[in-house]
Length: 536
Image (cartoon, rainbow, N blue to C red; front, side):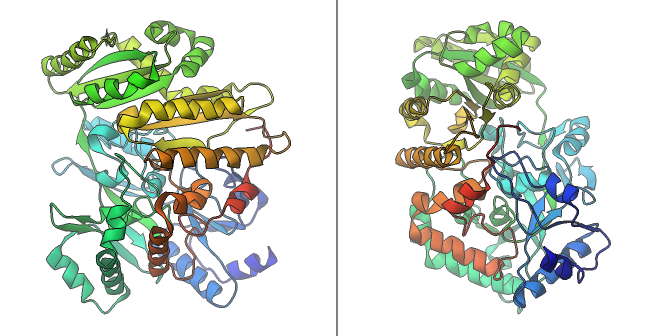
């Protein structure tokens, strides 16, 4: 610790630097199963402060005193992304300015320390919405959404955060801030001619993509969404002939640089909604129900399981009573259709309902606003109910909560996944964005029992193996972090991991940006940082 204190004396910024236990302890956890005590907390007031922090970390590391910077905003990450034993860069404290809405271009520019709820308040007043509407939208930060490539219930229509970021700015390892966004081929060639670090980045990253295009294409996840690894397959839009390096930063968990600002795309808020609900007793019927529903283009297609409903009966009885159609069923599919015209919205929902019923799937028309809200609340509260009301002597542990597999294999996948959980005699719930093929499974675990942390990692390994066996991805919204980085080679193979390492080396040659995430994290690292107590 004394070494860090001596190093920090050389950093002069207008913001704050704290080594107090209270400051460090406050950022030692996120929403994951881990705890890592940082050496200190840096709260920059400006981009210049970030730039100075990067230069300082670089200089210290070069002379054998390694210092790293891990950006943090809301601390709602479930993978351990913002945790570090070095310095946390707290962007939330000062760098939270939100600009005016461009109502014509439907965009808003914000500093990365802004909270999603502030963006939401501004955009909703104009009838607009930032579409990656996560379940944690009232407590998460924009920087974290960008870092994880987060998405929510509307992702089947609007995509994840990467599809909703127009441009972004980031401070890179040379201490300078750069802007990244879509470029034409001609513009990329101009960038490559620059005799600067920016020019070197464009030259080397485009060469890496070209020289390894077959390997990259072969390892493209065959799922609707993916957050595992660096998104090398997303940089070139071959159809539009556009190259967009911002897509590499979105989902990189702050491992390539410090994102300081982003211009976010906004969508028009729908005026009318209609929900249909399809309870399912047989998991093998799930793919047909979801596939049929998606043909009618719902805005959301969500799910929750029977354990979630049973918790709602106990802790939210009024909501459970309104959602009584879920009682006694294995899972429930909630599909919301939206539009600017009520008649057209009702027609789409009605056609989907009629088709589902023709295939033998009982489907309910939900038009009472209170009932619609109850169904959505139960889905959104699935993890929260388990977290707030665990069985005595257990803790809700989010480490299996970010799986995705191709929809056509979902019935078989869930059947085998539930069988694995039964072997461990665990109580659990799951819910999620089933229209995209992803669920959030969270078990209760007695973390004070002998060998509990080892069993958690054993289960993590088995579930990741199952996901990969079914052609899925181990990360979709919450990213790799501490928990899933050790398994990237299992999913992608050694050649693809080598490319991830090359990308990391290009942007961060000294390892000063959030080390141990995306590249270099190990099984032993994860095991070491697991919280071994049941108190949240």
